[in-house]
Structure formats: structure tokens, C-alpha cells
Length: 337
Ligand code: HSE
Picture 1 (tube, protein in one colour):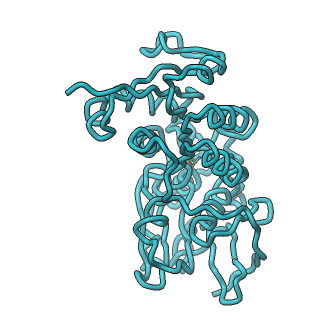
Picture 2 (spheres, helix red, strand yellow):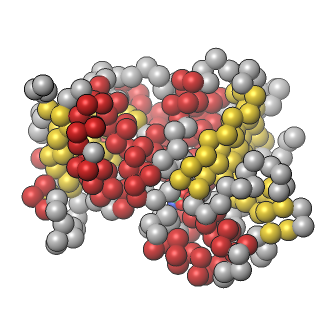
Picture 3 (cartoon, helix red, strand yellow):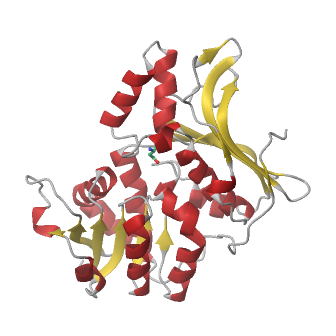
């Protein structure tokens, strides 16, 4: 069978970007079958590269090349942060290219603007990898649970802090556990975003927007990290960093990030190491738990490449992502049970 090619460019060749490149290569046949077209990795953009990389012939350092190449259909943004990622994403979407990202900071802050720009250009902006690493969560909320009124979402959304708390409960020091989490590629380049709870905050804001149809500014959310946690195990259960968003009867949204004691018989109690566990409560389905590897190179690349396949299959703007209109909502940060 001869199939038309679809060009992909990766911008940001760190942990996740290199994982996406490796996965596109390793599973090429399966990906081509699934996408219905050959997915060709054409360029990899970064400011520095490993000398011995198998992808050396694809390395470039000028975004104009990607922007002006009509054969690049999908751009994978794995730069992270908002500084360069924001500008390159806007330029790619404006040039009629779909963009796929794992960048939760960019989505939490600029998601509405970037989705609007994608729609205007009839292309996709997809970000399944921005929450829960390899766990499917954004599509299930938007599609499989679409018949429900979602009343609450809560869970363990950061692999690094869950890894640290797990190792502390096994007797390791905080410092040693953090060092290993960095070596295993779970932590952000600056791990203070993990430790302080900011990373969890961005993810719960993205989930709340999809579930409740309201934009929540991460800066408005009450956030407590794990720096003050001395004992990861208490007589009442295990300490876990929990992101929680709940829709109240009066329309306000309770949202917060804080360490909570999770009882030993609760389903999140056995979510250990870098795994994430996300509970979604719907008024028809009840409670559903999404569980799996929430951080790390290949699990996150799995979600990134699935979004690439979706873009290749559906070159026009997808309609499944019910993002808010950008309007804010009144928040309450105290815990409301
Ligand atoms: N640093 C993040 C975490 C990576 O530990 O969960 C995945 O978003």
C-alpha cells in the first residue's frame, strides 16, 4: 500500500522530545497503520544537541525552516515553559500546522488563546501529554464521560513528588529521593515547580477547565507543596500531594493543591513511585480512577505521539476538546466536603 507522507518537526530535544523521536522511529510501522499515512520526522530543533545522536541529520536551529516548509504538517512542542514555546506555537498554528505538546505551563496559562488560534487556522492544538504523562485523561473526560455532569476531580498529578513521598515512606532521605527522581527524568528542569506544587496546580487547572468549562488562572489557586512534609506516613494513612477541583452547588469552584493524608483503604493509597492516580466523579458514572505512569520519557512520549497520530488522521480542527471560552469563575480555596 502506498501512503502519502505527513511531515513532523520536534521543537525541544530534551527528555520528552527525544522520547517522541525514538518512539516515532521504533513504532514506525504501527504508527503509519494507525495514522493511515507515513509519519516522517523531518526536523528536530534545539540550541544544542548530543553529538552522537542517531537523529543528527535532522537537527536544525532556525524555526523559520519549519515555519516555511509546507511539508511540515505537525509540530511537536516539547520545549517547556512559556518563553520560546509560546511564540513558536503561535507561529506554527498561524502557518497552518497542527501543534502537539506536553507543556502544561503553556496550556494552563495560554490554552484558550492557542486553541482559538488553532480553530481560526482550522488546525489542531492537542495536549494529552500535559496531564498525567502516559495516562489517557483529557480525551476520556471530553469524550467517554461527556454525558456526565462532572462534580469533582482530584488526585496525584505529579510523579516527582509522589516518588519522593514513596521513597521517604520507605526510609530514604528527601534529598536522595529527589536526586534519583531527577536522574530518572521525572523532575522538571527546575524541580522547584514539582516540589512547590506549581506543576500539580497547572494540571488541575487544565482538568478543571475541561471538566467545568471555566478558565482558572493557576496564580489564583491556593498551593502548598511537599517541602514541609516531615513524615510521609501517619497513623491515619499516607501523605500524598493532591490537586483537587470541585464544583459547588452555587456554581463556584473549590480548587487547591496541598498534601493530604490518604487513608490506607482509599484507592489512591496504593498509587506509588512516579505513578499518578486521578479520580473523576460524574453524576451518572460515579467515581472513575485513571492510573499509570504520570512522568518519564517514554510514557509521556506515548501520549505525545498519539496526539500526532490524531493530527495526521484529522488534519482539520478536531471538535472533541470542549475548552472554556476563557471566562474566569469565582473560586474558593478552602476545603469544602
Ligand atoms: N515533572 C513532572 C512530574 C513531569 O513529575 O509529574 C510530568 O508532567
